[in-house]
Length: 527
Image 1 (cartoon, rainbow, N blue to C red):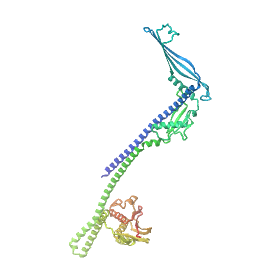
Image 2 (spheres, rainbow, N blue to C red):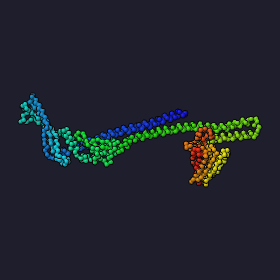
Image 3 (cartoon, helix red, strand yellow):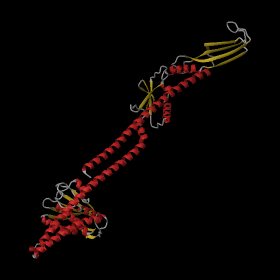
Image 4 (cartoon, rainbow, N blue to C red):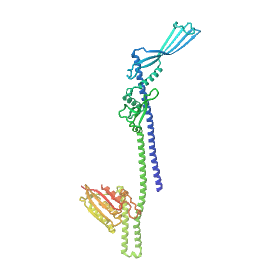
């Protein structure tokens, strides 16, 4: 996968993921705003209904008081006909006359000053009723002015009743005028108002905490809930107790302290699902991206490994070819000493290639759990000294030194001596290999609780933080420009890690660029 295609693929995947997240955010904001508008609409309807019902209840109460007064006073009201209508119909053939009359009667009631409040003057209230009479005269003479007053009708039908429309209109007008002068505390109570608001909110499915208050000319009154506090963003108002002209000095205010929480609760289920699916997509995206990066790194590491292995085999093969060509030379083939020297050279180079192949096969067997590791009781100091003997020739060639600081008292561990010797050898070879100057290596041992700690410290190149995290990965080698400036194929420390893990131990590195590295191995002691 070339770099341009890889970057384009990552860019498209990233843009798609960002687009999905932005769409989810946009949907959430839109849904929240729609819920807010719907909430506002329902609350306006609720407080409008509350204001209407409070005023109607007050008017009905006033109406009941008046009717109760009319029924209980026992006084005969003053009556006055304010409108009368006559209709006369005569049939000449049958000599029958029908007279229909309809009159509106006004009844006046004088209400004492103490009926509502001692501050009021006496009031006169009117009640309207209608009287309808139908008279039928048979075979009676009529003059131009109508029926003779002395005549008695053959049939008389009389009906009377209240004029509800006029009564209601008059009572409503009168009630508003009278009640508007009464103190607010006598017109409504906080308990009544709270119950009514709660009931109305419940009918619209608004189940959240609310507070209310009535203001008079922008000043708070005593009619309010205990925790009422004005909040511009969550308070709704409407005029209450309007007069006959539609004006009011009172405002009913209802606020919702937990409004945002309530609006969010309506979206919580779908929002949680949306977040879950978005997280799944995000995890899948991250995993896919990691896999792509990992595959790219593996491809680079594989190429690096092949190049390094080729480099490792190239020199021995070339040396063997030169040695064989020299042996076939007639001048040398008879020189036994030179032939033996060239044969030894071929053997050494062959051994070197064999060791490289063994390293690769050893890692493969470790991964497949096919490597037989028999553990026995061993002294860790003896293992370390044996490993030092293995690298002495290389160390002398570089004129380096290894200094041991064996402070561990308990040194008996359960290990495989061959593999663990290879572990120490690998670390020492790396310390020698990556020291640009004369190698100076120190080995420390100590006991901490039931563990023996082995530290191998060098004064080499050191490594970056990223390299420290990946140094024990198979095939990993930190690039330093020319990949062949130091021979290797990234298998040695992977082998170290697998062997130490198999011995129930731990291995890690502490390093700083330009100041060398310290490899630390922790192994459990035999109790």
